[in-house]
Length: 598
Image 1 (cartoon, rainbow, N blue to C red):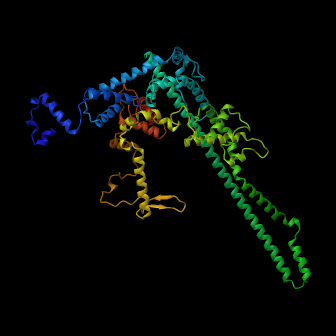
Image 2 (image 1 turned 60 degrees about the horizontal axis):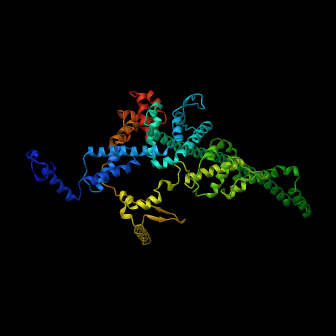
């Protein structure tokens, strides 16, 4: 049709039945040669399969793999084959990848490790009243996000069991080389399935899924506990700050009252004494010596008459002393909250495995001492990581080491270091070192050119040339500013700068007022539906399984679930208060969709 239109020929006048295969192939060659493309031959097929196998290491969604391989073939200027051929290649690669993983499992696991994994599918007794004779793996599936000390201890107990399994199978995991995406896929297969469904899998496939579950659950639980630590520390800091702020406010109010009373007293006493002296001086019946005696008597009044003003002066001096000790007051309040904080985060810090490659070695030394002593620290604990002010306050005036304050300051330092990235965990997904997320250096050195080509960054392969270009741009920008050609950049007196956004010229565009509804309030459902119509974001919610998919729920179910989670009212309650929303359908939809993407 396109060619017919370009040639000005009616489509009905074209008889495609006489368009034989030889002519078709000849025309195809002409078109490919004109655009610089090659045929999808055996070499291209091998390239496509290799690319798909590489993608499978980090991506387990066939739809995204299909889109990526189409882009890869286009970049290589290879003509695209049919959808069926690409789909067959993806399925073939998935099966080959799965076979390779099973082979690693078969050759890497010994009999004892196999028995350990099989034991997870056997019944065991749990600590709770509802955990009697439940399957061991079922007990490890549960993880509470509560910050109650009892729930935290239960999570720590599970983490201890999972960590032992994780470290035992870590060499096998390293050989598998599974990405976090793949680990999550296999782990979800275990978490969402019933025990008999897991048991019926082939031997190596079953072990692969169980190992992935152990790794994923360990990393997830570790991150959850670190989140609890950060939340607990921040809550303690906020509460201490607010209480100290309120205390300082009350002290300031009391001090202001004392100042007012002191000034009033001094003023009244001074005015009274001055009036008496003036009267004595003006008295003509007194001699000079008598006036001196009278003035001295007025100034040196009896002690009982001066007690009030002297008491006010002493009170004011006490207030000034309290003001000078306000810094100590904050740490006193922090020390009082230390026990509550310890009940939540002490065992987390004691059990966490931190990376030795730390940006704050003094803090790491203190953590090591704390863990070695199981939290039972004394005055021998390292204090070099503390600020000079904190070190001066860690020992009380009576010489006693303030253990509770030390622990609170240690937890605060740990939380700050984790958030800043200077302190990392070895076995985590969220809180690992930045280098762990990057391509290993030996791998980068070996495959640098290939990686740059994949990322379409070959034009920046020469680092020095790139830095010179950047440096030229910096020099050009600075020269323009020095010449006064950049009115949008201004420097402040303290050395900082400010960049102002230039005002856009007012165009003749249509006003947006008529687009928005006239009523004041817009239903949330209407807003979500409008956004979905414009972007189609609901299409991103997919079943976590690649096979055995159920029929996708209606859009209203997803809208209901999003509102339930966003408004924090729970999807069960929302289903009960909504019309035409089935609670079971909503539960199923979000157990297979929302949890996966969150």
